[in-house]
Length: 337
Image (tube, rainbow, N blue to C red; front, side, top):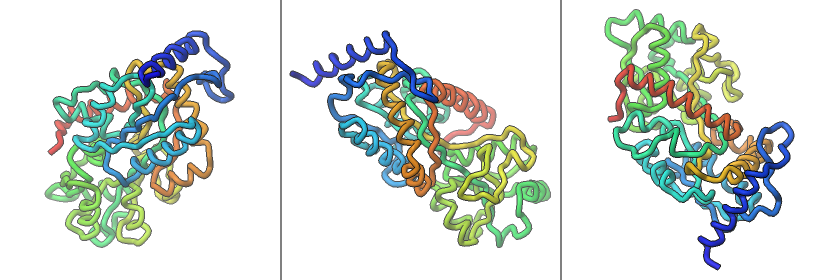
């Protein structure tokens, strides 16, 4: 019997299950698929739109391994970096919607169609949201030698406004989430700073430590060792709540910017048209994986915070972030280098 025949048979069975419906899980609106569902009948590819290493890749491998154990089927992680993840996203958008191709959506890939003229995919229309997996906190840091008196966000803004020429800040690149987040802060705060883009977070952090650029909006996972060593001073986090890794550092919202919310995040997507029962099955498994304290700890060690949202919630999250940051990109005329 061919693989394609097995998949057609599985999909037909799952479509019937979706039509009939089943009992809901406690604490979740997701339907519980029948135990004898034929999917999955072969290995599942998990496309990761970034190079190996780093929190997105690590989170993908942690969740992928547990998903394979629970589904009793291999989950193969395949890294396809390039153009903010749009190369990987286009591959997934064109894949057969049968539940055997997934992607770990990261914020840069979500926003890539706003930054690149021809990505070939529509983030909102061409994918089926499955489940969010993690949040990746970002943090405003300063060089404590260059800016010894800047100990909070208010003092940074006062200092920036007092300069004859705009104060420089850096991020991991033009159009990066750190860049967008600082531009949002500038827009809300009515102050100016000059963006100095780097090609990657490591060289940007290196030069912030070295004093070439005094301020950076950085990924917390990359900046944390240098914050702990005293080489960088964290003055604000972009998430709505404080983060456990820096409990004494207040949020931007706490420092006078009510409603400010800038969190990079990741979650699983499938090609549009993937059967609802398949999507719900994967989401149910991810929910249980992320409820495991050991998995939460592993993600935290990678610099990510476990966060589950079901398909409907993730769909809303995608649409809201796509609209919010897309508007900022247009308003500021932001483009990748």
